[in-house]
View (cartoon, rainbow, N blue to C red):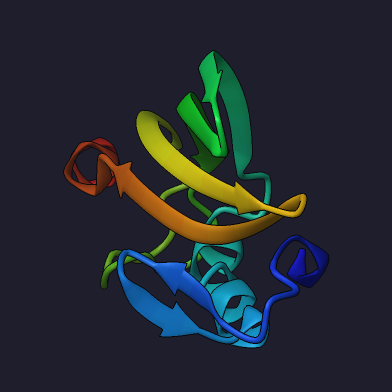
Length: 106
């Protein structure tokens, strides 16, 4: 995953992070939902920007936001806007409906 972010820093929601720190952010999600899946619902490309509307889903198999595993399958949506420079992600803004996920496991 780090190969997508090969600039010295990547702006994630306006915070500069190294590619290593960007990928570390996925660890809690993947440990909570090992089968996490991103499915593209809509995609738009204009200039150096890539906008995605995603359906996300996974099975709750690890603690997530303090909620112990329930084995429930959750599904939600995510919107992500990427700024692509020289074929690499330079900036990323995303919104995930985490409250909807928490509602499904509590």
